[in-house]
Length: 190
Image (cartoon, rainbow, N blue to C red; front, top):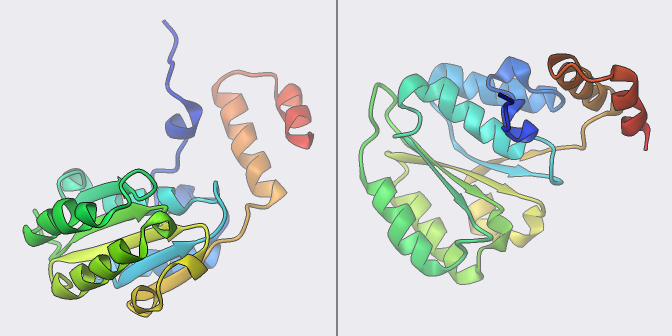
């Protein structure tokens, strides 16, 4: 029987130590998690650099076994209207966190796809539920996020991964999957 898990999920980093690149960002965010006190966070940068991964690691490290109950993940490019903010997000934000962390996390991926009206509603929700909920927002272009949201967040700007970081990942996967490492390295060069 073969494992048919998609490799991007199978080999997604599970801890802060597993994350390649973005060293300073990881250090700062890990410090927030270690203190169990964090601001709203805006993660900006190109696709594939670890923004979604770090949001998941935050939840897993902060909440441990109750992370799924304390973490709401939405893709704003799919759910981009004001109703999602008024209903889904607000309803989740209203409830208390499970465990010993005083807040829950709402992760909005691709939040630069939210309409301006939805962003205004999100800003109000961020203000109204700051004691019970922290927002982790990710986007490719922070310039598409309204200033009132940006001013309520600690902004982290992600850079593309280095060739060395990518090679490390490829080598790890190739070894684990028992692939011809030379072939994997040739494919990386293209």
